[in-house]
Image 1 (tube, helix red, strand yellow):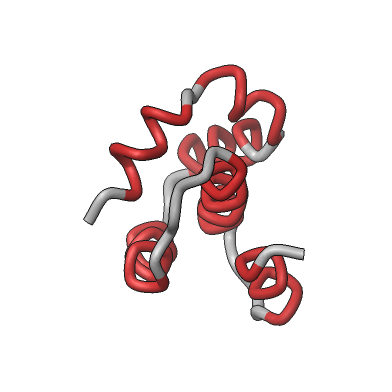
Image 2 (cartoon, one colour; image 1 turned 45 degrees about the vertical axis):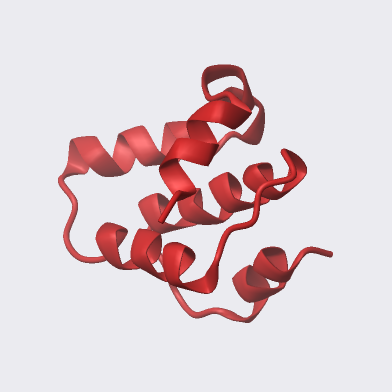
Length: 83
C-alpha cells in the first residue's frame, strides 16, 4: 500500500476536491514520480475550504481514477507535482 493511500485511511474528513489530491498522487506514483509531502500538503491546502457547488460536483466526477488516467498523462502530473 502506498504511503499516500495509508494517509487517506488515517486522515480525517476531506472534501471531494481534497480526495482528488490522493488519486492524483497515487497515479503520479504509478508513473514513477515522487510526490513530496510538501507538494501533497499544498494540494490539500489549496482544496480545503468552501468550494462552490459546481466545483465540488466537478471534483466528485473527477474522483474516478480511470477518468483521471484517461484525461491526464504522466507528463501532466509531473508538471503538476513539480515544486
